[in-house]
Length: 256
Image (cartoon, rainbow, N blue to C red; front, side, top):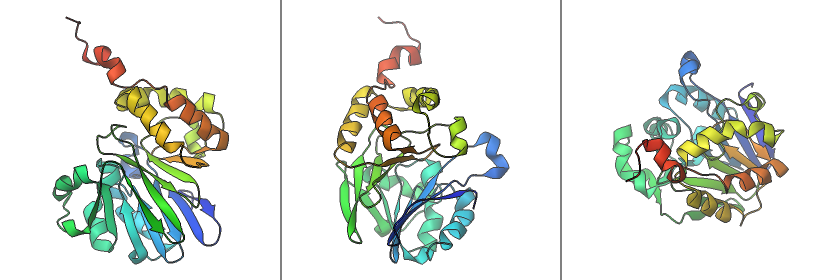
């Protein structure tokens, strides 16, 4: 499938990226990635997106595993391009819905009424066993959401980073892989300087991530960073200046 890429497969453990979007309104919407981790007869769905793509994503997942076998659905944060279809997924599966505890009280506004289905993550994150391996929820608060997490898969060594690493208009998005970091970097700069809260949070996240053996960084928007390019991204991101550093420019108010 043109909108589907297998990122890892060792016969027992598989990671798949889908790049489904609202094609009818593509000119006015964000290009998004959704991810699926499968181990044996269990699966985790990551950032499934809006109601508009629900049917297409459900069908795409069905080519790999029965959606009824989804054990967890993880939402890195509360935005509609991440969690817009949370009510549909709660009906279509019996999966636990994993999101920051900060957003649990808002889920009724998405049409989700069964709060017992939600696993609210505490601020420091969590680690869960997944088959013979583990998944680690890494804090990414204020990058850009105040309640935000990345997800590290220990088997594939893929870090699913949410909006961190997002690039909207890079030509390298066409093949979903960053081949030249310096060529790709200009497409990262505007988004990250505007959406990240401050450099302090960028540095804190990189410090947490470096505890793990990361082979690939997979953002929710744009292209993947593999190997050396993943290292280059972390080196760049820990020096990003965000909203706090650009406060005067953003507000346009003279200092008093």
